[in-house]
Amino acid sequence: MKKVLFLLLFILIVSSVFSQEKTSSLLPVILNILPGFGVGSFVQGDTETGIIALCGDAFAAAFIVGGILSLNYKDSNNYIEPIMCLSFGGLLYIVMKTYSIIKPIRFTNAPSISFIGNGFVISLSF
Image 1 (tube, rainbow, N blue to C red):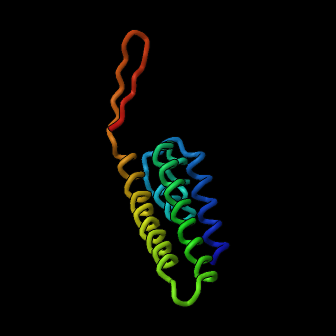
Image 2 (image 1 turned 180 degrees about the horizontal axis):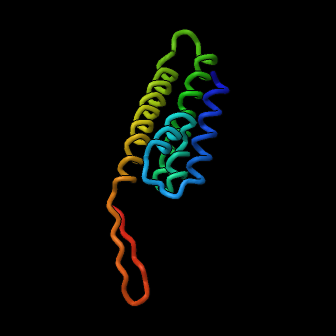
Image 3 (image 1 turned 60 degrees about the vertical axis):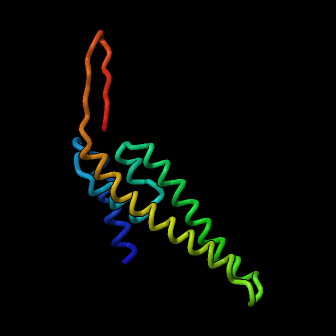
């Protein structure tokens, strides 16, 4: 099953690199869900969202791993700190995945305005 998923992911990445139009938000959403860490946003060209997703997923992973590791080192009476770490990491993970799904769709559908004046091109995106 893993080989099929990796093959599908490889085909999607190669097809996105060689495609001329990047009007679809399907590939960035899939890449933000499966490997995570803002890969889909970086592929789409939205570096701001990519950096936010990268940092958010890294912090969520750190809290989750820290909570799991601290469960092994705590005594049997004090499970509050590891549970809080796991809860916060899980909540942050869910929030970042939701953001990583919604933002590429909004980035694709955002209108773009270009102004040409005095030989300079100014491009604005909303």
